[in-house]
Length: 120
Length: 107
Image (tube, rainbow over all chains, first blue to last red):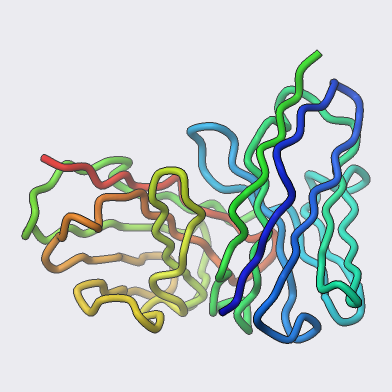
């Protein structure tokens, strides 16, 4: 079955960076875009961007431009999201999610989430 | 960015009740609308895509309708496993944006 397994929780100091991984299995990795989203505690969902798992092309939300980098390693069917310049408002559960096909088909499945805590 | 407004933000209902959640987009998104269900401590999962297409494996008591700016998700007969938070998401243009969520609670 299709699975997305993310790396474990991180505790980071303000101003530093975090890199979250998303190991995929059960489907052709290069056949689907991977999206990254986050959810602050008790809050709604925020889209951060996507990576074309085949070409490596990316599209980021304007809010994160210059601070986020999404990459992938096709040899190990894993995607990565690095966020720099962490602040307290970056504390959230970060998710990767597979695009099912066209945008209208939605994102499914999702990884289990990676909790990023920012604390001095 | 396209703003998505969901209502109500929470609803208290009993098993067997019919529940309807609405989602309004700040501009025309045609039928580029996805509904998700999220249970506590779990990631969201797709219920309905393209406004009204039921995802495989999703019970038929869930249905979606609408186009343009106004959409709705209906649960025809609420079951115990349906108590969760529901989100709409527009897929018409980037950035993808979500409604604020509707928490369906037990009455």
